[in-house]
Image 1 (cartoon, rainbow, N blue to C red):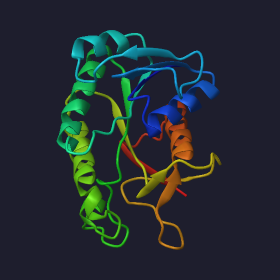
Image 2 (cartoon, one colour):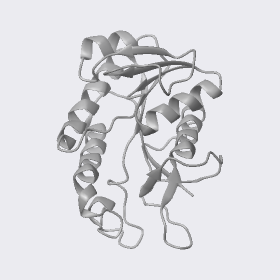
Image 3 (cartoon, one colour):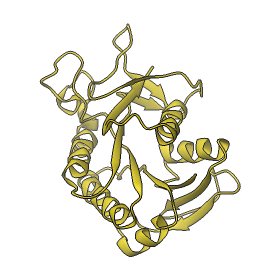
Length: 211
């Protein structure tokens, strides 16, 4: 499978790229400032901006599926929805499926189903409220797009580099927690979930995974 990873040098993007190469896929890595550091050999690296519709259409025309894995810098969280729409526009024009490696913000709180995780301080400290709100807007951008084929994969509340175990649980629109009330997964296992979804789609537009 030909996979294009947009935002391939971030925490999630590098691990998605690694996992895709591990499984024998042909990978193109798109990033603003590409370099070979942290990316496996054999990956085609392209310098491009996710807002560049013309370049994106050209790149996505020769791919089977795209993974959007971008996280704006602090202070620029509001740009996330527009970037997502630009990628979906290009994908719709080329008939390319998109998996959005998004945020936990748009999930329902497990303790208060009437509350989004983005609005629940039990899972989103104040310093992360802007990116949580941006991820909610990102999902809405997907839901309002008239033509693109997409899947939005939300991580749990805690996502950080760690061990690659290959073990995780899958859910839909509610944040997953363990028996101790903790919602977490390693970035390595989140990448496994991304590739599993690409290879065997669950059929739901919004999914989440956790331990």
